[in-house]
Image 1 (cartoon, helix red, strand yellow):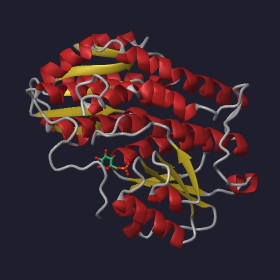
Image 2 (cartoon, protein in one colour):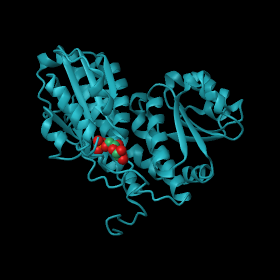
Image 3 (cartoon, protein in one colour):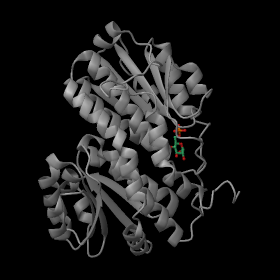
Image 4 (tube, helix red, strand yellow):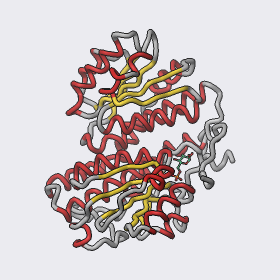
Length: 369
Ligand code: G6P
């Protein structure tokens, strides 16, 4: 066991640190040598089928569902198609509208989650084309989908998913850029820029992993709290949901993620002296709005840790604690933003003496409905 952990105290930490490699492996061979286009030979949609797509459903469970939420933002922005994301256990029972031109994407690290598999089967039964994003070659999901985009994260042992999530995001970026090129919904220059940005993510992830002292300190402070809130807007909201899930599943601290603009409609009532709030502020176009939201929680005495994109120094005026992520195109930021949140959850759980790799009541793969 100790040998398999490769010198790390837990599989989760090892897997967090494997992310630069996992990102590189997932991109490998999927960007043309001249950096202008995505190569996804595993996708069998014809150019005509891509041009006539009408709607995309993404369905998944847990962390994979959160990757789907990021996928929705990216696909809608780059491909200009309506995208709906459903928790797999809900999808089947809500009579989804599947017509010609409907594409269903399922995302599953293991490829064995019962609800995700059932959603896939239901989608196919109704005649949808199904593309799976999975990490396990030969898994049930990979065998039953029409096409498979593999994430090359390598085996993930810890119950809390980390490297699978960031590679699922990469798969979604690649697929979105692949569709966008065919549908001409993104300029060639924009596609080139995002592909270059994708290639640089692994080194940027490494630089986050090389500087974790501050995050460990903040985790020490969080270890004694009862409740914790994550807020963000746009893509940061999707990442906030994942940060909150990570923390609650391994540290057992009650955590909630809120769209920052929604605070006034309820959650603000729970903010009082010293309640920790993690505020994600990487989305440049929403930055001023986020500053306003941080001020709202500050005014109620919250203790704010902000996670901002390098260069957005303004945040230091409103947040007592700030962690920066390396500069990148805001569309790509989730891959980096989530890493400090994974580390925060990990170190908080360790400080509380929790069984990080095997949290109580949870399983790595849920094969019953
Ligand atoms: C379980 C795991 C999560 C995972 C979810 C979906 O809840 O603990 O880490 O995100 O299942 O698993 P899948 O293998 O379908 O991605």
